[in-house]
Length: 215
Image 1 (tube, one colour):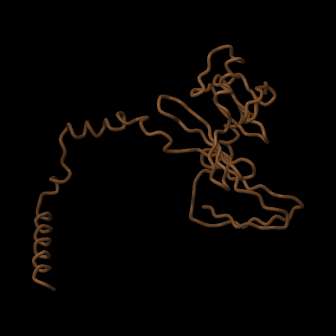
Image 2: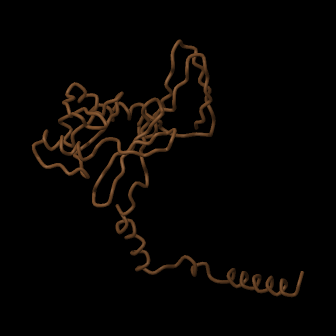
């Protein structure tokens, strides 16, 4: 060990010894103002961080997923991600949907603040539940037409209740499941997360098997 190294070791050891001799309250004690500032941090920064927790939903047998993005000022937009290419695109034409909804509701509609309470993708259609939970419409991603979907209103309203009943309650140790499809057709793998949302994990073809990581 060189002289410089010995000198550095002695300095560090001495500093550490001094720290051990200091009263424990020197590290933990704070003023009343310090605690008041700390208590107010949550309120000060509430709502300033957007999209810190996305809630993606799989569609097209796991080939795509969609989620909602919140924007500054209260705006919202919905996007679809191609799981194979990573391409991100609008889930639908927001401007055209705003025009169609404005005609239906007979009131102005902001494309950045669409009055949508819930969305569901069903085959090649998009089901929309109004913000007041009293009307339902169906359209496609191009919003070529906006039609009434009153027959599916109950399904849209009942979806959260059914999801809560089937949600995952807790997680455990890391493990894996092996799914063996002995049926004559494809089997879709679906997991309900802790919020009750259905997440699709692809399809197992007839006669094939798949190992799926889980907890």
